[in-house]
Amino acid sequence: MNEEKHIEIKEKLGSRLTALVVVLAFIFGSLGGYFGALKAVKQPGGLSLTASQAITLQEDSAIIDVVKKAGPAVVSIIVTQDVSKYMSNNDFFSPFFGFDGESGVPDFQRTGSGSGFFVSADGIILTNKHVVSDNSAKYTVITQDKKQYEAKVLALDPRNDLAIVKVDIKDAPFLKLADTSGLQIGQRVVAIGNSLGQYPNTVTSGIISGIGRRIVAGGGSGSEELSGVIQTDAAINPGNSGGPLLDVTGAVVGINTAVDRQGESVGFAIPASDASKALGTYQKNGKITRPFLGVRYVSVTPELAKAQSLPKDYGALVVRGTEVTDLAVVPGSPADKAGVSENDILLEVDGKRIDEENSLGNLLRDKQVGDSVNIKIYHRGEEKVVKVVLEEAK
Image (tube, helix red, strand yellow):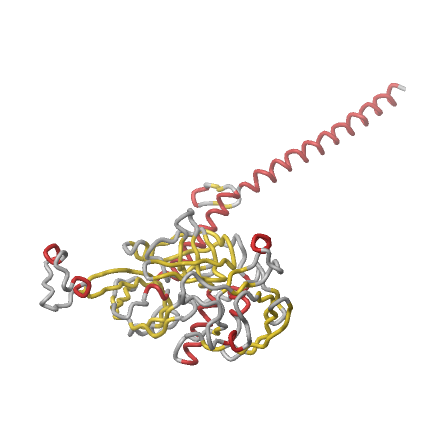
C-alpha cells in the first residue's frame, strides 16, 4: 500500500514538473522572440538596432541612393539681363549705379535663377516656363561638376508651367519620367534643386500630400492656373523651380513649380506624365501643343450652387473674368463654334462627370489637338450634348 502511494505521488509530481517546464518554455520562448525581433539589424562590432531604427536606416539609405543616382542630372539655371535697359534715361538712379544713359553699354547682371534636369544624353532639359520665359534674358546652365553652358530655349508650354531648354553637351546623365497615374498619397519623394539660387543641388525629402490639386500660381510677371498638380511637404524654395521631384527609384514623378507661402511645407509639382506629353508633342511637332476649348469657368460645388441658386451642384460654370477683356467664351474658339455661351454649365466630357474629383482641365488633359469630344451642357434651362473639336492653344 505504501509502495502504491509512493508511486502515485511520484506520478503527480512528475506531471506537475512537466507542466511547469512547458509553461516556462512558453514564457522564455515568447521573450526570446520579442527580444529577437528587436535585433533586426546586426552592425559591425556587435551593435544591434531596433526594428524602428532599421526601418529608418533603410529609408535613409534609399534617399542617399536616389541622390547619388539623380543628382548629376540636376542643373542650376542662371538668368542674366541687360540692366542698362532698365536704367536708361533715369536721372535718379544713374548717380547711384554709375550708369551713363548716353553710353548705351550693355550691363548684364544676374537677375534670377531656377533649376532643371536632363531628360536626354544630348542636352535636352526640362524646367518651368516661368524660369525661362523672358526673351530678353540670357540663360546659363551649371551642372553638378560646376561646368557652365549657354542655354537655348526650345519651347514654352502654352497651357502649363513647362519649358524645354537645350545645351551643347554629349553623354549627359539624364532622368526618366515616371508614369504618375499610380501615385499614392503618403508616398516618399525627394526634391533636388538650386535652393534660394544659392545652394545648388539642395536635397529635401517628404511625402506626397495630395494629388490632383488646382492652384493659381504666379509672381511679378502674372499668374497662371494649374490643374492636376501634386502637393508635397518636401521643402521647396525659390530657386527650386523646375527641379525634379523623385520617387525612391530615382524616377521623376513631378517638376517642382510653386509653394504656398501662407502654409508651411506646402509645395506643388507638375506631374511627370504632363511633362512627358509636352516633350512628346515637341519631338513630333517642333513645339509644345495643347488642346484648347476656349472657356473661362469656375468649378461648381454644392456650396457655390446653394449660394448662387444654380440649377446644378456640379460642373463648370462659364463666366467672365474681372477684366473687360476676360470674356466667358473666346470668340472663334471651339466652344464658341459649338454654341457654348456665358452662364452655361458644362456637366460632362465624353460621359465623364465634371466635379471636384474631375475638373474640366483634368478631363481635357488626355485629349489631343484635333480630337472631337462630346460635352454635355446645361444651356438656357435644358441639358444637351454638343460636339466640340479641340484646337491648338496659342
